[in-house]
Image 1 (cartoon, rainbow, N blue to C red):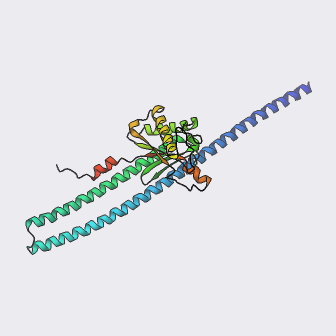
Image 2: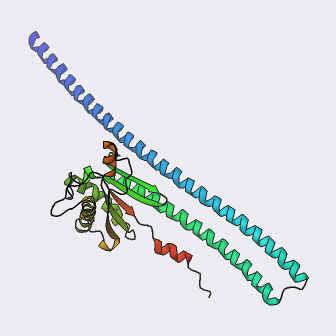
Image 3: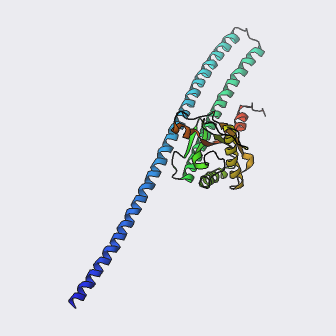
Amino acid sequence: MIRLTLMSAMSIFLLSSCVSSKKFKKSQEDYQGLQVRYQTLESNLNDCNSQSAALRKDKEDLEAKVRNLNKEMEFVKQNYTQALSQLENLSVLSKQQAESIRQSLQNIGAKDAYIQTLQQQMAYKDSLNMALVMNLKGAIGNMDDEDINIKVDKGVVYIDISDKLLFSSGRYEVTSKAKEVLGKVAKVLKNQPDIEFMVEGHTDNVQYKGNAVLLDNWDLSVKRATSVVRLLQKDYGLDPMKMSAAGRGEYHPVADNATAEGKAQNRRTRIVILPKLDQFFQLLEPKKQG
């Protein structure tokens, strides 16, 4: 009887120890998962902070230029006004000449308002670009920086995707792994129907051995760009009127082709969010008088 009691107690002890060990292991796995998520969020935050600093620098440069222009205009205004007053007092100017000078002063005021409008438009565009970059990074999630890079440079949004993620060596068919990434990018772009973009193919400087379809790196880069555009249109429903494809070959490197690492960086596909030049030129057009 005593032996039976001891065996029962031992079984209960071993069972409870097993359950506690499983809970502890599960807690460890949850903790490790939270650590990975924290590191990803921290990396995204650092990227956003870097982009924000670059935009603030561009804004400060623009504001400095505007201040200088304002100083120059104020100086011209003062000199025009003083000269006009002196000449009118001496009865040297005709009414027509005086009116011409007044009209010049009004034009200076119009240019001042025009500069302020440009400044507002630049700030608005910078805000839209930053929001787009954040949406893209949020949609793509935890991707290796060597495989995909999203950035803003001089007011233009660039999405660089490594060719090792998109294509097999010397091929232009999009891989199944790449379709998942392009699908996430397409989802963000589709939610911005006014956006127009260009897909650029880039290669390193290694001579491509031509075949019946492709002759050289020019052909390979173009074919890769059109493969991506065609997939975005047919598989993800992006408007073909908003897309274009281009092949840059080996002639726009971002790194030195003398090293293997540099060649890997140069083999890329780039999606360029095109600026709305028509809206910019509309700002340059003279306003019609009512």
